[in-house]
Image (cartoon, rainbow, N blue to C red; front, side, top):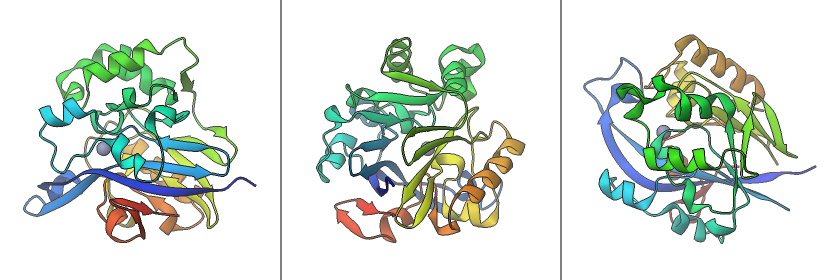
Length: 255
Ligand SMILES: [Zn+2]
């Protein structure tokens, strides 16, 4: 059986915002911190990267605190971004996908519905959606359409033995989580299906909601799929850095 190790790579943070950003409509008066991550799945044969992080010029433009080029963070565990062959994009928000061009030889896996909404649907360009988008990387992803480098997934799909993409809408039209076989069972990288562990624990969404009912159904789906609640990971929780063994600077082993 193919098993993978999962590494969380912090490439930016901490960023501070009102608690209501993390816990929808709660904690307005609290200040909370979040980090930005990409993840590396390391198996015997394959290495898969989940999310692309942020491209350097956009990080500068947006003044992202604590930013390090994701390719540099990956190099700390011996992964060369330009040699990565499999890149899963959980969703097309700037903090998860704008670094896509850092992986020039990767096949990019994204949900077809996410691709269509972000790239082609005029609603996807309305201010409320363009605020979380990056036109440059959207154009790059669009340029891959019709080539071998872009795989548009229609719902749940095993992309490699031991790695399954799971449609989990709510935060975006077609966010996908990634189920990974590990030595401890099936772990789920839920990305922004929850910004923090607390969202899962308290059954409460974070922000940027496109479908609240869908979000709750996605919680049910991911909880059912994970071998244990501890193996369900969020998108931005600083605990992914502080609570797990550090294998290199800002890189921790989740499972
Ligand atoms: Zn995010």
